[in-house]
Image (cartoon, rainbow, N blue to C red; front, top):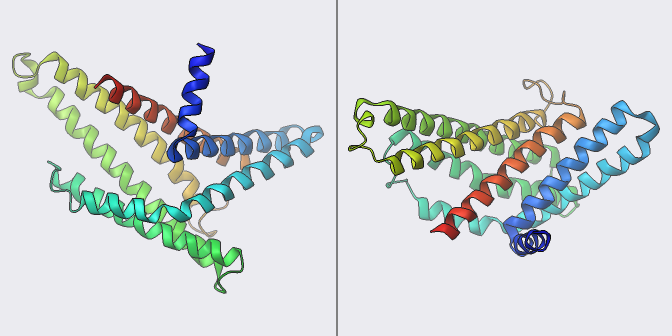
Length: 241
């Protein structure tokens, strides 16, 4: 079992997405533990400070790696297009707008990173705010999409037609219930990230700047673990297929 777990971890780390998920999870975990130590255990303040420093470096690592994400995002956005295959028009346009927000997020973050590195002489804080705003918009649209999908699935499962097993086979019901559970996980993940996104906006916007480090770490850890679970489920389904 241990060797199988190690092999699975090594396999995940060979892919960019798998490595990014692990770095993200470790970064937020360090922020969570470091924040708790600083706030609750003054004697361990040095350890807490070091963990927060590790978290900052891991976050910086992910920022640098995202310099190469634009093309992959563009290809995905182009393939999705206007979402002609989506049955629900609300899901369709929310997804299109979400893809657009994601596409605009990357160049804004790149400019902010370049400004911090003194490569470009522009106001870094303005570009960080803009990139965070696009990220928050994408997450908000993702929340709306998940809620809509869950509502439509619930309506189909509870419709009079669904009461007749001849009309809706049990395998179809299970597939829809599984999809609802996965959408619920996506919803929770997006809500956790959205809370952090608002926190990183300029002060005066809702609860911006009010979260202690441990709370940012907790929300990020929850989101990261949910993302890893979703990826594991998707891999399992792909293997089964």
